[in-house]
Length: 380
Image 1 (cartoon, rainbow, N blue to C red):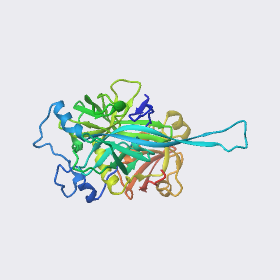
Image 2 (cartoon, rainbow, N blue to C red):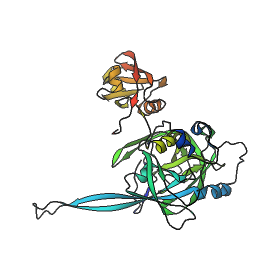
Image 3 (tube, helix red, strand yellow):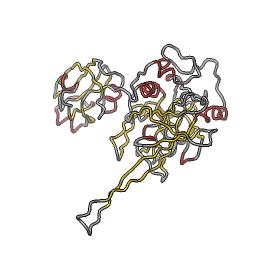
Image 4 (cartoon, rainbow, N blue to C red):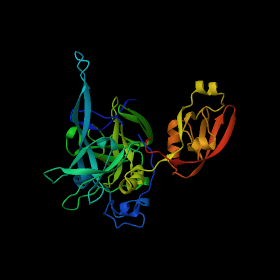
């Protein structure tokens, strides 16, 4: 299945996009979010909008309520190309710099101007503008924080008056089969509305990226609400008008298969994006691949599923604990590991500094190691 991210370019150039969730953020940052509520002691540990007193609404009501808080995000990304004169080899190559224009969507999450979008919408931009309904001119935005692996970013604009806000849904309120509404700017068509259902939860996908590492998503919502280029970063809403996900990707060779980052991932990351500009990730320090029958025979292991260690980071947590190349990880922190995706999902449940038990198959034997997870280095 070929998966494309929902980022539109002025020339309809699409950038491909993956993720794991980690949480945090200080109270100051948390109080900036969703001012529909009086901030409780820890706003991100609770549903940002409670369902009590909120009744299901018709789709037109949801759209009328949420649309003013859905914005058009325009990113200006510099790119350079070199030309060489073959008839004059002594002449230095000439470098030409151009600007590519990318269009995406975003959701206002704070009346003071904080906006949530996909990281791939603003990736590499040296200028970002935001078009808000009711304002004739776009606002210049600054990048507050971004996380490549989660594909989430927060940008900030300054408006003359408080802005409308889209609240987050409770993380536990998402069910397969429930109705959802997507709002965004596909192909630059402002505030386009599509509707569908949650087709599945917990979907893992991997998307190769031409100018960066593969994005690996371990926990996405699948929906049949139409998502097109330019929808990236826009909200997926329930019929309470609450955000259940951030529209992110679509299966380009299928119909009705779109993906959104779930609100549980968003809520665990957005506080850190605002307070420190990045998300803290736990780090095991291994390069892995899925175990296949051929690899299992070569290694002489008896297990049929797991993550094979291809490389171990020098002085990383795994190496310090005694894990080595050729080990097959079958469990981490009590989570069964059946391959690459499940190992990444397991690590996402922990924070740097946590001690976890890692079970590996080494030849015909099974060994257990205690690993102290580190913080993912910035260059990774």
